[in-house]
Amino acid sequence: MKAVIIGGGIAGTVAAIALHKAGIDAVVHEAYPTGADDAGAFFTIMHNGMNALAAVGLDQVVAEHSYPARGVRLLTGAGREVSAQTYSQGPRTLRRAALYQVLHAEAAKRGIRVEHNKRLVAATEQDGVVATFADGSTAEGDVLIAADGTHSTARAIINPGAPRARYTGLNVVYGYAPAREGEEPNTYTFVHGARAAFGYIGVPHGQTWWFSRLPGPELDLTGMTPQQWKDHASAYFADDDFPAVEIIQSTDGEVIGSNVYDIPTTPNWHTERMVLAGDAAHAASPAAGQGASMALEDAVTLAKCLRDLPPDKGFPVYERLRRDRVERLVANSAARDATRTGGAPQPPMSEAELAEVTRRRQAYQAWLYEHHIDWAETVS
Ligand SMILES: Cc1cc2nc3c(=O)[nH]c(=O)nc-3n(C[C@H](O)[C@H](O)[C@H](O)COP(=O)(O)OP(=O)(O)OC[C@H]3O[C@@H](n4cnc5c(N)ncnc54)[C@H](O)[C@@H]3O)c2cc1C
Image (cartoon, rainbow, N blue to C red; front, side):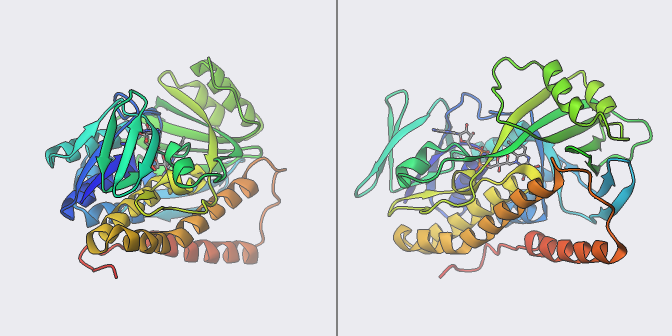
């Protein structure tokens, strides 16, 4: 079997590596010259994402190119600690470009081709699939795996009339500031400010990586300068008794901003020979920090399904294994955006309310983080 993969991001590249492990040929087709589109932002791969990487032997190499996330502190805008959690091991923080580079290097080591400047514009299927790219070239195979991200072209081909990605009502701004004195590295601090959410992590080589989630209208991003992004983000934290503005304004390196979209549901994930994976099927807002991890779970699960079943049976099983989980995650992430940002300052919780919120959060996190993919187990 030969798979034509569209998108050399996380889901596409890991699907190719997992398929290779399953003895299936795959060629990745990426629209951009480098594959490091939106390279500036950083993210965390959570326990479940690292578990999916481990299933195909990629966890060690990703660990080598990333930082451990050892814990999370949650603060109010006044700087009061609401909760603190430590992770013995698991989540890893890294820049998006670093992850792309590691995955592409691993693909190359296995002899998997990643073709750049191949932007999918059309695809047809009959006895096999034919993908057509913007440069007029085509690629043929037995199946097409569409991992072309939130604004997927393939989704509309597989699923004409599917809803487009939805603007979540949030902009995000990310930046790389100097290290903060006395700050323990590798621990995330999240601040629920009066108007918006802010977070940062100190990384060992002397930087503070920060992000902010800002409620507001969809922005025209053309021509926004780093200083404009910094001023835009700073305005949201002016009333908080927490040094978010200081961290943002001290940034002399990259600042990256964007609008945030999600996809709560996609009616059909597949045809007979074409299938969606990652954000192309189900994008979540960054609140849950799970988009990359879910893309990894998809990629490995899909490869197992194609290893053990023919595509017409494997695709429905893949969808059944994945749909409920990812849709729950997307809904939960959207609900977090709605409750945590943009409203009036919240009154403090009673002890009983706090205990209940903590209990629910722990149950949800166990469901999320303890998801395990057993590569050796046969899909039936
Ligand atoms: C600002 C921001 C912060 C985030 N933070 C986190 C976080 O902390 N933790 C987390 O887990 N997730 C986070 N996410 C989400 C995470 O980045 C995505 O869920 C993840 O990248 C999805 O992987 P993917 O492979 O499906 O899509 P992508 O990684 O987006 O890859 C899609 C690829 O397809 C290519 N492509 C697009 N169109 C075409 C086409 N027509 N033809 C060929 N190729 C095409 C793109 O160039 C890209 O390389 C964040 C997202 C954003 C935007």
